[in-house]
Length: 82
Ligand SMILES: [Zn+2]
Image (cartoon, rainbow, N blue to C red; front, side, top):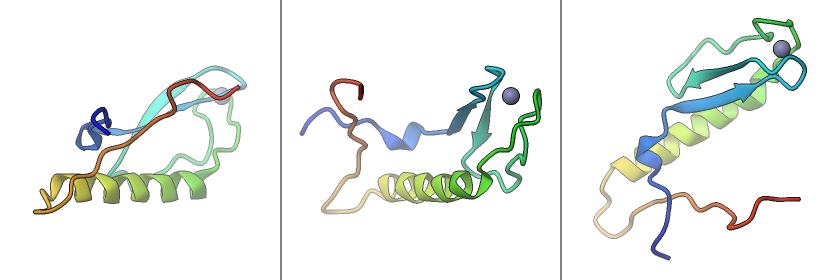
């Protein structure tokens, strides 16, 4: 598989509020996950976001480690889910 996505370039998670369409970025190293949308105050699912940030940070760290036998990339579906 040649066309993996370079995960060392991941900066964070982009969040888009489905109610008011506000969007913002939470950096991978953030320890302060917003509890509510800053615009309409909808509740943010902060626990899954915190888990996702930690998982992405670990993947990024693995990719940046330059393991002697393996490299780590991300793979996405060729076509969007319907
Ligand atoms: Zn909102």
